[in-house]
Image (cartoon, rainbow, N blue to C red):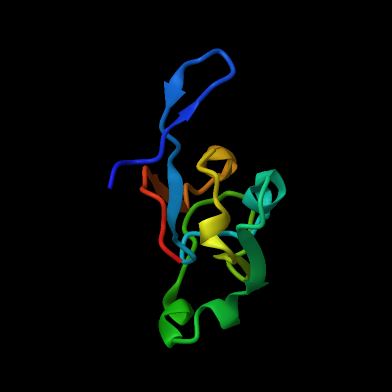
Length: 108
């Protein structure tokens, strides 16, 4: 299948890049992606619920970004198939937690 493409109001063709993954180990739970997303793609959940294994116990945020290592909330992908490929979430994420790529229409 070919990738999804769109056309701007000015007639320029563009290829949207849809969210593929969200790295919760790097997420600081700031909510910027949630606020800027025009669709219902993200959900803020408790970090413990997002990481049922014990790997998070060893997580240490070494950078001095003003956020506590004890952040109890983290973003998750609520409805990945609702993404329109605008990459607004990636543009506002201070930790670059998301990966995006062009895609064909997903089968349900």
